[in-house]
Each structure stands twice: as structure tokens, then as C-alpha cells.
Amino acid sequence: MATMNKPEMPILRETPDQIYQRIANRMAEIAQQRGETPPATEEGEIFYDFEYPLAVEISEQQQLLEYGFLQHFLPWADGEYLDACGVFFGLPRSAGEEDEHYRQRLIDRARSEEGDGRRQDYERWARNVEGVGGAVAIEKARHDLSIDVYITDLNGQPVTAELVKQVRDKLEDKRRALHDLQVFPAKVFPVNVSVRLVLRHDAEMDKVQELIANQIKTYLKGRSQIVYQQIGALFFVDGVEDFADYTLNDGEANLTVPLDAIASLNLAVTT
Image (cartoon, rainbow, N blue to C red; front, side, top):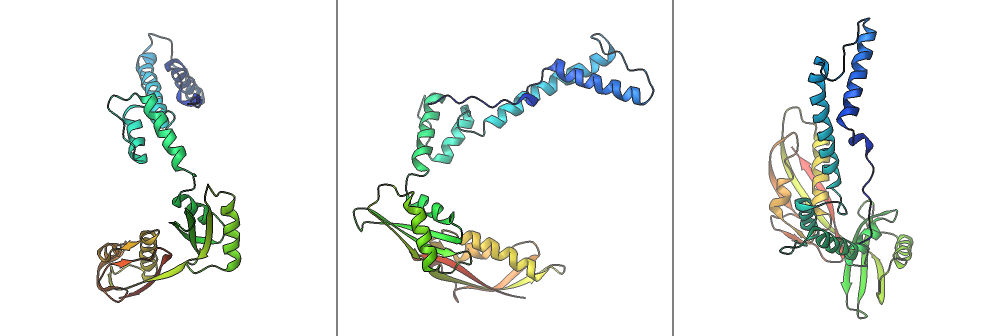
């Protein structure tokens, strides 16, 4: 693995003497502003005995803060923090495996999972194109291996032929060892949610409906199975005390979104 130097963080690496000197300087400045004589700050003085231990503690806390900050990053994480990175990548540490070897395996996994032309990569690349709101990629065996990408606009509606071509051109630059890549307007799978809410007396209907819509849209994103009970749990936003008469596509059953479609919410709320 290439050597990566840890970032310099001088503010978090002060010695106790540096911190104590800043405290003493500040105390002297305050005393002068008051027209008083600054206290003696040399070793052995009362001010020193009280303040220097605090400077030591602050210095140690700075070191701990720097250590904790660096543990957020895979190249510098170690021990149980490195194990947490492994949980994220779904790659546990082998028995007796040292940090450096385990870290290299995790970095190799990150590099192979990110941007190597998998289905999730094409979905992300397509969504990064201006004007695209949603994208679903499907791997097929049309010519040994192929990828079909279905996209919607920012309003969740089928896109124009112009945007399809634009996305296709963008993805062509990123294509990885595929014999075929196609982009299509996605089919829209309507998700009709109807519910009657019992609101708190001071709740504003417009805000409540917006909160619920945002939660349901987040839930629907990229989901192939829509569970009736899970949608119902999303009604309890601030201001909602209870709900009734809830239907999902005019029924109470779970829904399955076709592979080549993207769920689009139609929310009808009454009180």
C-alpha cells in the first residue's frame, strides 16, 4: 500500500507549556485591562499550581481528539475502528489478522467495489447527469453481458429522447468491459397512498403533508418491494396523532415494483 502521511493538525498538538503560556498571557492581559497587577505565573506560584494541571489535561484531550478524528478514515484507522470499517464493507477481519494486512484488504475491496462498472455504479453515474432524478440499472445476458439503464426526470416522469442520448453519451465514457449498454426512459410505477390524518390542534396541514411525502419518497427510492405496514409507519411525523382509512394502491397489500420501473408517489391526505 502506498504510504499516506497523516495530516498536520498543529492546533491539536499543543504541549502543556504552550497551553499554559497562552493562559498566563490571557490572565496578564485581563489584569492590565482592569488596572491590576498580573499574578506571578512562574513554576511554584499559586497560579501555576492551579492552571498548569489544566494545561496538561487540555493537551491530552487534544491528542485524543486528533486520534478520534483520524479513526474516521480507512487509511489511518486501527483496532476496533478498523473493524468498524470492515462492517461497512461487509468484510470481517480474519482470525489473528494484523491491522496493516486487514487495512490493505479493505482498501482493495473499496477500490474494486467503487466505479468498476457494476449495476450500482451505472445508477449513480446516471443520477449525476443534470436533469436525471432516478435511475435503475439491470444486468442482462443479451450479448454475454449487458447493462440497461432506465431513467426518470427530476419530477419522477419518463425522460425525453434528448436526455436519454445525453445520459448514454456520459455513461459510454465510463463503460467497463461490457458488450452492450443501453439507456431507456423508465416506466413509472404509480404508488397511490391515501390516508386520513388526525392532527394536533396546532399542526399545519401543508407542512405535515410535505414531511410525510418526503419520508415516503425516501423509502421508495431504489426499492423493489413496498411493504404496506412500513409505509403506514411513515405517517407519524410532527403534528400527527393518529391516522385511519389508509390504502396503498386502493388496497392493503404489499407492492412489487417491476425491474424496469421507478416508483412514483401520489399522496392524497385528508383530515
